Length: 332
Image (tube, rainbow, N blue to C red; front, side, top):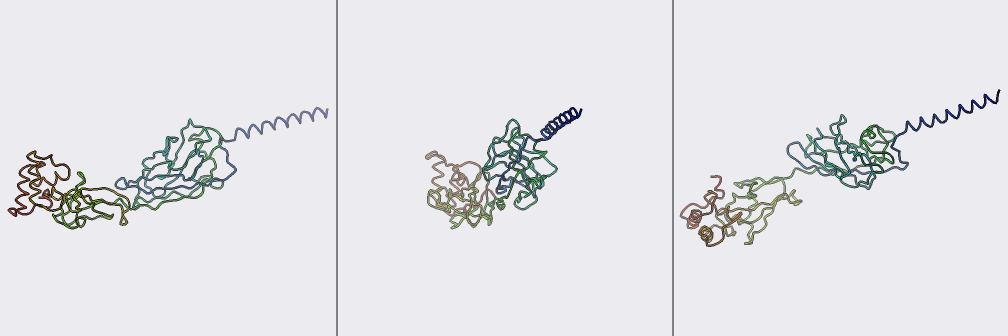
């Protein structure tokens, strides 16, 4: 009898053992914590103004890191208005998690792990902020064994299919460190002073009197400007180029403008009979039509055409029959 009881007990133990293993397997996850710690540096690019309080910034992972979902929170934003993935492997990029600065990048759900390695630009985020120059930072809140609710995550998974629901319940990830570029100043703009005028539509600057030695004194900017000579070798004649750069140490080229001295079609910076003759020849089809900044400079009557009346007015001004040609006849 005792042998029968012992046999029954052994059988029961074996059954319970199988059941406990099955329960453990059911309660497992498709994500596995890797035994070795991964170090991941995050990089924010320089915010770029999109107008008003809206900015755009690039977010990057700066080491070769095999990842699944990627999540981060931008601190200092009022709202995230758009996210574009930096690689072809990402889709459905933006989710709101009760946090205006939270961004969740999820690989295509058809992709199985191990996921592709990511190194470099992963997302471009458009956001609004009240901070000067669009300044934001990445929250240094890594998700890990002791911080399961952390938001800064580069998640490496070693089994299963990558999808949003699996990520939201959470797996452990190792994240350490970030690199943030200082925000840049607003892109400088060029404004006219002392009568100078910036024509953004045409890409011209004018309002500079003839024979001015340094045309840049008629313009102001928080950046840096320089004059480049025209084909006649003059920095103060029609067709010379004014280059606008980002900062006082020159920095990056923002935009180039062509200088217009009304009445000066030869590009020497002066208004004389040679200019009048060139306009007359062009109007009489003796030479090719004047084009671009030269044609704009020749139209001293501001009627939108280069004709004999313009030639006559330039000739009269050169002969002191009438007052000098206005530095900006369009303002009259």
